[in-house]
Image (cartoon, one colour):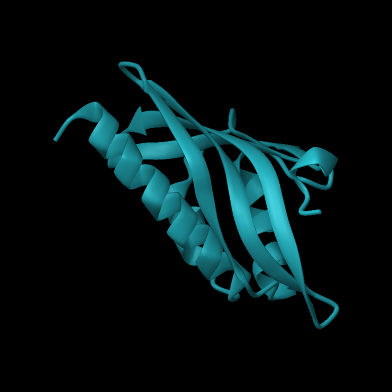
Length: 135
C-alpha cells in the first residue's frame, strides 16, 4: 500500500469518526487523533484548541450535543510527505440544529502525522464561508 493510500484510509476513518461523533460516539474520533501536546483544532465557530487534553474534552462535548446528520468530503485533495500529510476538501452534508436539519458546507484542512500505529490527525481547521452556503 502506498503512502497516499494509507493517508486516504486515515481520511476515510476520520470522516467515519466525525459522523459517529454526530451520533454521540466520541471514541472513534479520539482514536483518529494523535494524543500529543502539539496538536490543534480550529472549529467552524472560531474555536482554537491546542493539545490533546483540550481537544479530547471538545470531542466529548460535541458527542454530547448529538448533532445528528452526516458530512462527506467533496473535492478531496491529498498531499503526502515522508511523515506529514495534508488533506483539503469541502465538508458537505447536514446536521440537526434545534430540531431542524441544516445544510453544512465547510472548507476544511486536516494534517496527519505518521506515528506508531499509523497516520494520526494533528491538526484540523474548518471555516464556514458564505459563498459555500447553498442559494
